[in-house]
Image 1 (cartoon, rainbow, N blue to C red):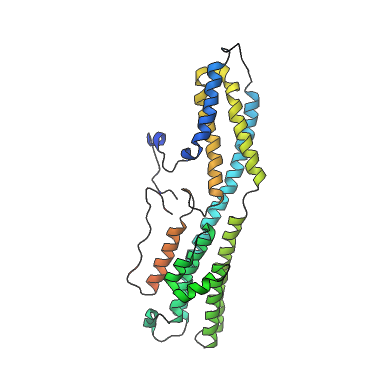
Image 2: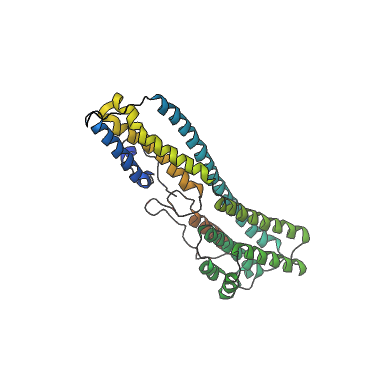
Length: 312
């Protein structure tokens, strides 16, 4: 995610970092080159001249703008839903850690420093769950994080399962069951804690739904085709009216249409590593800091900060 202040004045003209321009540079170069060629040759090369009125471009441009707005709204809804889901995971993780610490019947809170304390293991598994979900959504390997948090044996068992996040939730549920049978957890409170696990499972399933269900391909294909055709034909409708300014006008129109199209493509799947994707690394680090602090750890990892204006 790009993190920077709102540009103003002349900054609007030269800011590149965080702009969609690098992603559409070649498309802009192609259609501007076509517009330049049309402008230079229109009526001068063997009397070659094709004239179109602006009426069809007005109608097509209006329809294209509406369609772009619809698709970008759909893409942003997916982006914003993903952000809300991860905010919910932050909330659930903090709440679950607090409930584990306060509701399980242990007489010595200092035992949370003990590596064999079930409360400590539950909280560390909560941190591991967030990291595992991040890796699942990005298609990377979660085993190093699991080994760092839970040890080699747990990482080995984790590596043998297909869905790591579900495995961790099952282990957390089994641990709550053992605490219930050992009478260190009351039944109504056990049900409340299990609801927190269910909510975390719902977050994971919802993120997987966004990840695995893209916007239908015909929408994307139709939008790409229409935008390209519109920008290629636009010079023929403008050259008689604006003359040598035709390439400049076409470049502005193409920047708007291609930019909105590229931005919709990027935020359609908000969990990756592109500039405008969600900062899952930073959110996982925030969860880890909060929960390790709840365990009484003194050496906490530092929060992630933007590097070259980019927060991952």
